[in-house]
Length: 548
Image (cartoon, rainbow, N blue to C red):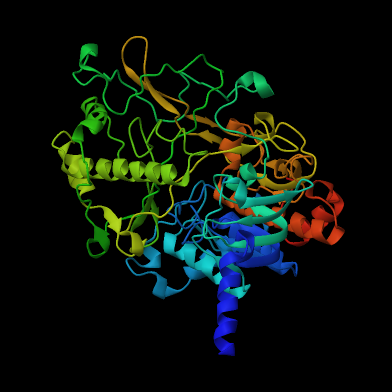
C-alpha cells in the first residue's frame, strides 16, 4: 500500500510541477545553436580547449551547405584558410587517398579542377572538391572523436518562453520539445540568426543604401552585369510575347527595382546545390514534380530561342562522376524574389518556402529533360544526368539544406563594410581572413522601361588582396548581450557579406568564436571584454591566419 501512495505522490508532483521544472535540462560551458560546419567546428574548438559543449542542432544532418551539396568549395586564396577549417579539407584529402572511396571512376580519371587551383593539392595534403556524403562523414567523425554531445532536430522556441535573460546575459534557452539548455556562453551558428534575434540583438535584413556606409556596390544595381546571370537578349516577360495585356509570366515581379544605390528589403536568391550523376548505375531520373506547370519556365524557353547555350557551364565536377550544380545564366536554379520573408519567417512558413524552392527546381530539371521547347542537343545531354543515388539517400537524392546565401545580419560592435572586404582598410583585432570576391546573386527580376525582362542584384567584385575579419563583427554590442557570439550571421553590410559568406570562412569564424567564448569563461568577463592579446595568441597557436 505504501508503494502505491508513493507512486501517487510522484505522479501528482510531476503533474503540478511548474512548466520550467518539467523540461529536460542540459548544461555545458558553451551551448552552440546550429548544425552546420561553423557550429561543429566551434564545438570541436571548445573541446580542444578543455571545456564542455553541447550542440543544439535544428538539423538532422550535420555540416549545413558543406555537406549539403556545395562540394565545389568557394575558397578564394587558400593560403589564408587555416586552423580547423584547413584541417577539414585535409581530412577530405585523406578520404580520397583511399581507393575504396572511388566507386564510379578511378582517381586518375578525376580532372582535379578546383576554383582557381587544383582540386587535390598533394603538396599541402588538402582537397577542396568533394562529395556531400564525404563532408558529412568528416563532420560525424569530428563529433565522435571529440565526444561532442549533439541533440538533433531541436528547434529553438522563438517565443519569449524560449530564452531567459538576466543583466544582458543569456541564462538558458529552450527548444520546442521543452528541453532547456543552460550555459555560460552561447554561439549562434545558424544561417538564420534565430538565437541572436531572440536575445534582442539588433540586426538588418536586406540591402542597405550605399549612403549608409559610404559604399558603391550595395543597394539596387540596375544595369550592372558582372557575371553572365542576366538576359543578354531582348526577352519578352509577357505570357503572349510582346503583349502586355496578356499579363506577366509567373517568374517576373510586378515591382519596380528602385533607384540605383537605394536600399530595400530584398535579399539575394536561394537555390539547392544539386549533386548530379551521369553514371547510368548511380542516377535517378527527374520525375514530374507535383503541380508541375511548364508555363513557369517559358522565359527559359525564350532564352534558348535567343541562341543561349550555357546550360551546363556550372555542372562543376566533383569526384565519382558527380557535380555540384549551381545557378548559371539569366534563368536557372536561383528562385529569384521568392525568399524575401524567409529570414524572419515562422518555422512553418520557412518549411513552405523551402518546399516552393524544391518544386521550382525539380520542375526546372524536368522541363530541361522533357519540354519540346528545349533544344534537342540540350535535352539529350540533360537526359544523361540525374540525382546521385548514393547522396542524400534518406531524401530521394535531394539536398537536405537550402542554400541560404544571406538572412539576418547582426549590427554588432563592428560592421564589416565594402572597403574592408576589398582589402582597402586595416582591420583592428583580426580573427580570421576572407578573400573571395564580393559575390551577390540576383535579388529581383523585373520589367524594364522598354518592356523587356531583366535581372538585378548580381555583383562580383574582386578584393585587392585577402582581408582580415574583425573580432567586433562576431560580437553584439555589450549593452545588448554579453555572452553571445555570432560567426555566421555576423555584423556586415550586404555587399561585404557577399564575400564573407563562404563555408571555409564560416568554419574559421566558428573556431574563433569558440576560442573567444572559452577565454571569456576563463577570464570571467564578457565576450566584448576578452583581452585581444590572449585571443590572438591562442588563434595563432591553433593555426588560424589573421593577417596577410
